[in-house]
Image 1 (cartoon, rainbow, N blue to C red):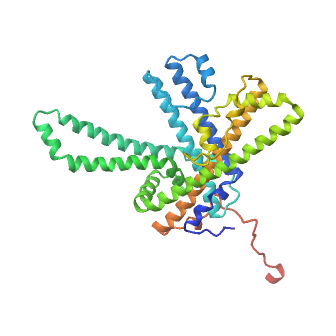
Image 2 (image 1 turned 90 degrees about the horizontal axis):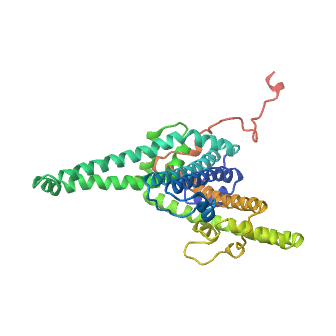
Image 3 (image 1 turned 90 degrees about the vertical axis):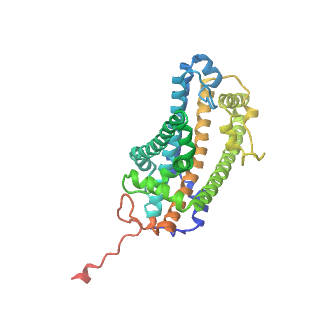
Length: 377
């Protein structure tokens, strides 16, 4: 049975509640974990190629090289940027996996699982890659034309004259459109996965068409929905992080009652392994950027003992941290998906909620009434 869907701003406000779903958080968290693992592997390889010893990397960063690195070797730079790109791609996949669950809920299918969403996202990965590559090729082609136009300026006398005459039309106007395409490409990281998740078939052209249509026809509505959704995701993830923080304190107190100082040292050692003072952590532990309202784990991370138990406990803390970010991505994806359904209704008079689910089946919650056989005889 489909839930009533308001085709207005109220659809966005439900994102924190709709995003607090185990299957959505699980799907988002799995892709975030894979993206982070790829980032660590490629960063390690880039540092090793750049001449940094493995022991120094392990002692200085461990499994959390969370900062911006500069490299001397070209290969190291390419690997590092490649790892960053794969991480961004994983974030887009996490958004898509949550979005397809959201659209299936709007269509009336509440049994679309997290693993169905993961399979869907992986199946649509080539479509999303072709979309990103198409935008990159277009920008690269226009940039190449700009380079060729710049070479014309090397012609004595005539070259500078031609640049001056044709600068506004077509050089400047073409580059204005190119800058717009670059902006759309950055927006596509979060919007294109939502658009692809709303499609029944794998279509690159239609995805890009809808991407540009949303930005051109409904820029203010999309910007407003995006801003509100991002704020809701930030505040919702902070509330969940605060709940985890208080649970951490309570569990530490309860376990210490029985285990004594051994438990305190174990917790301190586990937190010392984690980058509790990094910006990635403080982004979650602070209510809003620039607002000094939040909490911190740094006061407990002062032990140098790294036993096996401490490492395992640190892994548990890390997974809980991934869940918090998974919830943030879930809220962001749900808000964008529901907002996209509203935008399609506004700009195309098209109702996504009237579509059939991806896997239509019998409504077991509301089975059809069967006539009595005596009435048929």
